[in-house]
Amino acid sequence: MVITHSSQDGTHEKKSVAMSSVIAAVGLTGFKLVVGITTGSLGILAEAAHSGLDLMAAVMTFFAVRISGKPADRTHHYGHGKVENLSALFETMLLLVTCFWILYEASHRLLYHKADLMVTYWSFAVMITSIVVDVSRSRMLYRAARKYNSQALEADALHFSTDIWSSAVVILGLVCVKISEWVPRVAFLRHADSVAAIMVGLIVVYVSIKLGIRTIQSLLDVAPSGIEDKIISAVECLPGVTDCHHVRFRYSGSQLFVDIHILIDGEQTLKEAHDLTEEIESIIQQLLPNADVTIHPEPTT
Image (cartoon, rainbow, N blue to C red; front, side, top):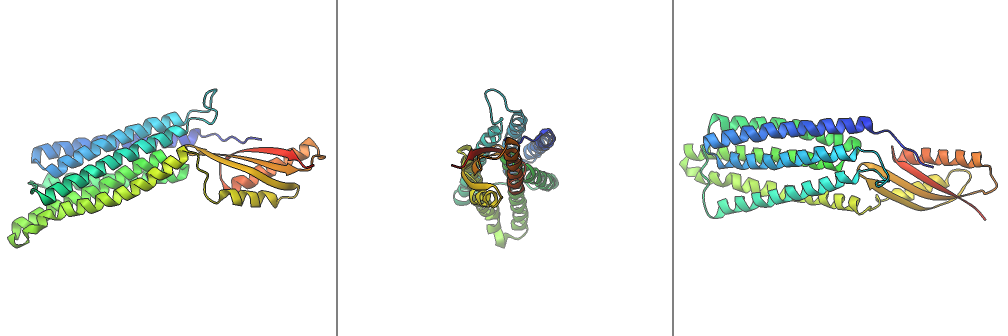
């Protein structure tokens, strides 16, 4: 017995959130690029490049969500949800490449040469605007990711969250440059942005690796930990169920598919067996909301 749920509303909301992220990334990339070129700030130009990568990730997320929302067909019996997992994996790899570049650049500046930063009003304006937009976008993306269990949206949210920290690092660098100009005795503060960038880069690498592991587990159909025992216990407590076994799970994007076998009295009518499977489906969906459940009843000997 299979339960299916309409996901049109969820797909529409995920597409809307993903598209708004694309628009935000376009605006931030253009703003940072203009200010970076006019002020000659390497930090802001680096942020423009970072936002450009976020734009690529946002576009990837939008198309992934759009494709994953397609219903199952003859060649994709479990739908197209795995596209979201693939998108999340590519985005995580892209974020890791960005972080390693930031770590390399920060270490190089710290050890070998000083970065010349030109601090203007627009330098602070563009970075503060970036933080405000990134906070708004990351919260919305994380909220939608948790609501629909979407790894693609979660990866996109991680990109925007990373921008918050990197933008704060650039602002810190700009402030330290001004302080070092005003107070020559604390000239070492010019290195503060590089040190902070290294710390942020290491944190983001750690978070990205955790997300990457989860994404790979989804692609390899790794079963959620502890769920199997909960389902077996809940189902075997029902009157009429002798045994629950061969419990299997697989995710296709945000959609969870559950497949179980049960032993029941072979002498009962078809309607009685059907009513029992309906009750079992209800129990499982209380544990795993919106799960697509398949039950294989087997007669006891």
